[in-house]
Image (cartoon, rainbow, N blue to C red; front, side, top):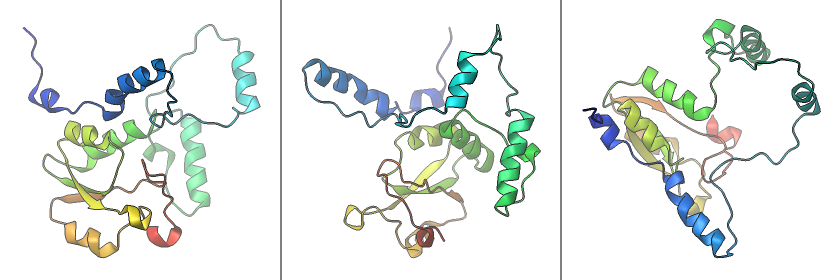
Length: 186
């Protein structure tokens, strides 16, 4: 009989998906619902992309290489080189989104029990990523009265231990939308 692993049993449910039934219930009750859970672009798709899709002659849209196409990774490397960040195309992995990239990063830099410091409030699914990677999130509190600006560096320094492997800063902040200034990041 198949069993669920210990890690699987302790994996937190996606808080975003947990709230969907409540939104659906409110919608059915003719209440206005503002979906803030999935980032949906409100800009028009580029015409060149839409034309390429509309006029393609392929019978099968095949997957590209798992790390992303060589041509695309070279363009990314060239972009970074223009900004004085030296990286080679073979050092780049293209992911299907930020969540996949964070899972890869956490699993690559941290061992079981290691810590990652993250300004709180933070994207709710970071908890699931940390559980999947067996990593502990250490929150550094940003305050509403400061518009969720980054706390002073001294607050981060207080939390650094030998188990600290990273400080994760999402800019703009998710879920607050706060855009950290260049001065804050430096």
